[in-house]
Image (cartoon, rainbow, N blue to C red; front, side):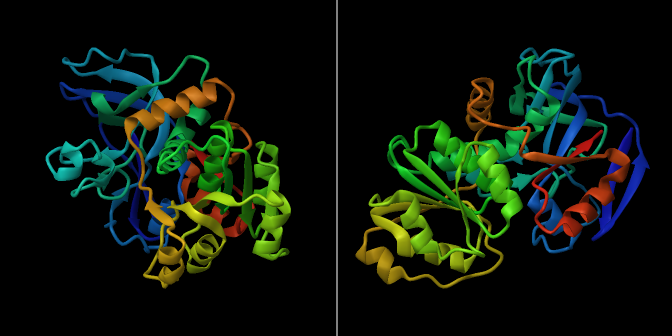
Length: 340
C-alpha cells in the first residue's frame, strides 16, 4: 500500500509498504477521503510544536472496513466508517471521569502517531463510528471538524435555544460551529471574518448574518444584527488576542465565551471586565465519540450543509499540491479533501 510520509517540513515521500493485518481488537479501514486541517498546515510549515518528523499525517477521514480482528463484533467488513483520532491513557483523572478528550497523555494520530495518510489504516474498534449507507465519503471525513463544533456547542451551562450567538471566524470550524448553533435553536447567529469568500459560503450554509471585519466596525455591525438584543454566547474560533478582546467587550453580563481557536502564543486579556461582568470563559478541546454520533444525526436530519464547506479535492498523489494550493488560495478555499 502507499503511504504519504512528511519527512521534513514541506516535503512528502510516497512509500510502498505491506498492508497491515488488524490486531484482535482492531479494524482495518480502506481509506477513501482525508480532510486537510489547519493543524496539518502547521506541520507542513514545521511550526507544530508537538510533531516530529517523519510523520504520516491525517486525522479527518472516512473509508470502508477491509478487515476486522478476531475479537471485533461491532463492525462488519464493507461498512462505511470513520474513527476518532485520539490516543488516551484511560487511567488519568480526566480519563477516569469521562473527559478523555483532555487526557493528561493525549496524543493524536497524524501528529504524535501515524495518521490516516495511507491506503489502509488500522484503528481500535472502540473508536470506529459506522456511517449510514446514504452518507458520502466527504461527509464522513467532515465528521471530525463537525464533532469539534458539536463539542464546543455543549461547553455552555444552558442550551443554545433562544440565544443570540456570535461566531468569530468563518473557516471550516467557525462555519460548522455557526451551523450547529443554528441547528440547536439559537435565536440568531452572526458570523464574522475578514474574507468575503468564507462569509459567502457561510451564508450559503444558512448562516446569513455575516460581518466582514475588514469593512465593518465590530460593535456597530453586531448591534445592527441583534438590534436591542444582547450577545448571550460568543464562540471564538480564530485564536487571536483581538478576537478575544472583541468577545470580552461585547458579550452580555453573565454571558459565555467559548474558546475554540488555537492560540499560537500567550496573550493579554482584560480580566477586569471578565471579573466585573461575571463572564464565563470556557475552553473547548476536540470531542468525544458521542459528538461524532451527534454529528451523524445532524447531517442525517439535513440540519448541516456539508457540500458547500468542501471547496476543493486533490488526488492522493497530489497531497503536497493540496497544501500548496491552500497556501496560494489565501483564504479562498475552505475544506480541502484528499481522494485516496
